[in-house]
Length: 198
Ligand SMILES: CC(C)(COP(=O)(O)OP(=O)(O)OC[C@H]1O[C@@H](n2cnc3c(N)ncnc32)[C@H](O)[C@@H]1O)[C@@H](O)C(=O)NCCC(=O)NCCS
Ligand SMILES: Nc1ncnc2c1ncn2[C@@H]1O[C@H](COP(=O)(O)OP(=O)(O)OP(=O)(O)O)[C@@H](O)[C@H]1O
Image 1: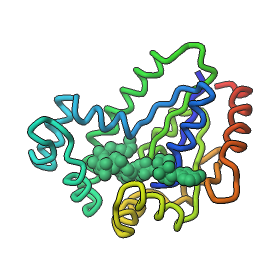
Image 2: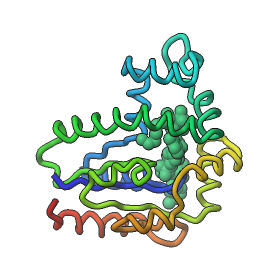
Image 3: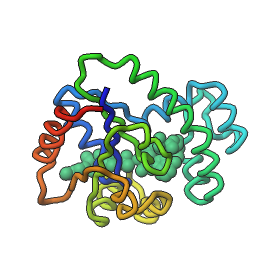
Image 4: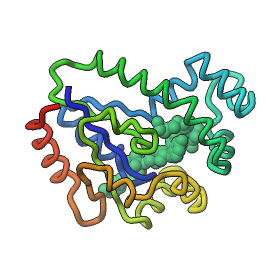
């Protein structure tokens, strides 16, 4: 099965791009969403998170306290490293299980991950796509979507590789700006992938 990694900085629009591929029938594994699911269901991971970031990392009913964890990890490099070490191996395992279960009729699959290059998971994909957007556009989109400040968005951006660094490792780019059409770019990639061997 051909595996395509897709990533982009916070607010670049990678999820939006993946939704377009889904309309073409392409299965998408959303690593960030799966990470959050595992963080509330895997007992070993839950204990690891509590040990690292305190019992207030979860509500009494077992929900993840995103704000609490984000407040720690995006202000302290060693804490973010710890969180990544706990979560990423579990996400890799979930991806392998998902690939084994996904429709054998799918021509290819996508793995969407914010940290595709940073986590090394791009090496498990046959091709990797980077979604890029202008800085100001990304800031505005995330501030509007999440109701957060510019400083909070920038704190996350600082923890991710720059677009320049990611572009060196990417095979293809998608430009998600005001002028280039996303649909046309996705259709071009789709036809390219339909003709690509793993
Ligand atoms: C830190 C957490 C609790 C913050 O939750 P919150 O709801 O505020 O943000 P959300 O998960 O929607 O992420 C929004 C964006 O933040 C950025 N981000 C998230 N996790 C990370 C990280 N570990 N390093 C750098 N940027 C990150 C990404 O651009 C992501 O798309 C949450 O992101 C989390 O549990 N992260 C660990 C899982 C992980 O590493 N996910 C990313 C790759 S699999
Ligand atoms: N081309 C576009 N036109 C208008 N709005 C867009 C476009 N692309 C993305 N958006 C909006 O910008 C916001 C961020 O997009 P999206 O959630 O796809 O980004 P992301 O890269 O997955 O972000 P994150 O890393 O934060 O999860 C969303 O609210 C989305 O609807």
